[in-house]
Image 1 (cartoon, one colour):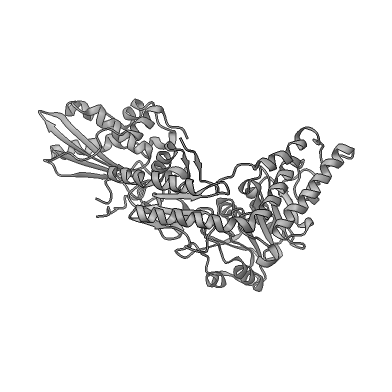
Image 2 (image 1 turned 45 degrees about the vertical axis):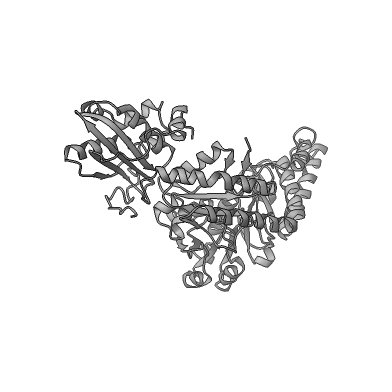
Length: 386
Length: 151
């Protein structure tokens, strides 16, 4: 049976070249990058060379990169330590209703501690409209605005440049969770005008368990994990050197692929989207039709439930994801699908297909062969839409 | 989350899907907001369930429990069918993941609604699921909000 992994927004396989680059740092150059001896020095050199490569991918300076355990930790550190360290700048945080829980729950955690929180609504494409931010921001009170670069479920790319400018005008700093964009589309911190940015290696064919926080020089964040002077006193704990080396190699490869990869992925996504709409009635696209991640297809099918679709697809070797309640591990469908205004029963029928560099036209055609009869069968079984 | 082999079998190859011609009882349980609706139709003859069919909107657990309950009661007396509970249906499927026990395990309730409908001379009996969102105090289900099914 054919096997089609089409869930690259969840995670990606480690590129064999990345794995090769990492290997020596487990067995041969295993030193603690803080140690004085030559093993430690070698590890330290690898760490700093890696930092340069990761910084280069997002147009940052080397000393603006702090390695973390991943995107979630970077989000937590950025938001929590900035708010605690800059109480003189204000008590108010602004975020959006479609953020990843790593941001949303972190902001809610701070709200429970007494910080003020505004969660901005989004339009039906999932975009934060600049005017919504203009109305909510309060000069003197708003210290931090955190809006994701692109949404993980519906693929919509947010107008970060414009939003960051509005934050700065009001004296606030701007954080973006760029876990879904770094390595997939060009990301340049200076061009975007962001002060803090979170990224993760495993979304760009790097290993799991490693990510980074970009903090612009002069932005006073603090340590989130305590117990040592690693990462310029900003992240305690023995550095995951093999992970960092893998992240750097993945960043290097992503940079080489950036220009050549975007167009073919967009073409595959178009072929898949057009095919789905031609074959399956009562379907709607979620997210912005154009301003979206390359290779991201997200749709909702009326009258059927997402987990059922996923398990049927898996039976044919197709691995995708959904924002239905049953797949979110809670009893409600995805907060993102509800935030863009979908009724609960529609949100339950969501399907997300996110393509990666190794997906082919044959994969798309196979999905288009398998998916329509699955939806047809589930609809025939459903008492809705009769 | 892992489903048992029996759940997967009933999900991939559901038994008794569809509608009964001139049903003597029709029951429906669930709520599209919560992501599960089970619709069961029965044909009763001499106090026995001669035929039973279901249609379900929901996850694999919802579909598998619906299929299983139809298999369990076909040919049984109404009295026997009334003794079947959501729990015995789950047991017959070798269990369900904990989160599914109270969210998608409503097939016996739908069957009981169908029997109730038969006893009330075939008037469709519908009940809004109480189980599906019972842990969420502010959910529409908990408030007993009425949900209109799409035409």
